[in-house]
Length: 155
Image 1 (cartoon, one colour):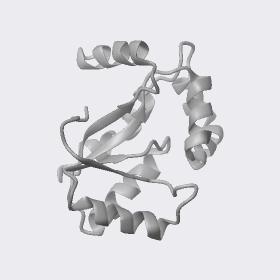
Image 2: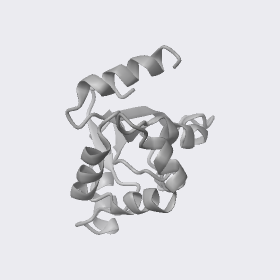
Image 3: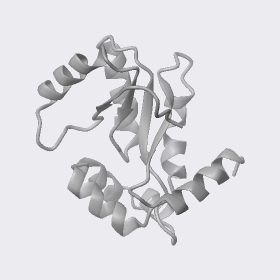
Image 4: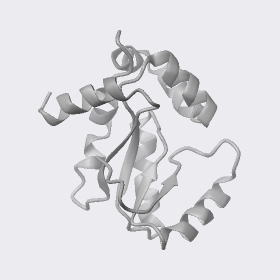
């Protein structure tokens, strides 16, 4: 899981809703010399995230990447926040992949495990591009921490 004692820069696997890709890429490169790692915005589509990781490295950025994932939060809160912060393409991914959505949105809230499973090839890549996960809790700390403890214990 992501350390909090270093400087990071947030990058977007999907386009930012208000800023052009060219501007975000330039801003990312401008910030990269001050950062010690990258945190990605949430993306529910592992294929998009994996492709984005390759593009970051193809551009010459070698900072460790922590993949932003939502914690175990209520699904209504997650969907509301997702549309507010502009990850609409990912929300559309969830709608197109109903089986994945059903598994991830079981009773009790969002389950990050299917997303983590979908990202496992990128996380396990021998080049070490991905350093781990950054879990966004959306102030739902208790459920997310309970999920995190289960994951750390091997569950």
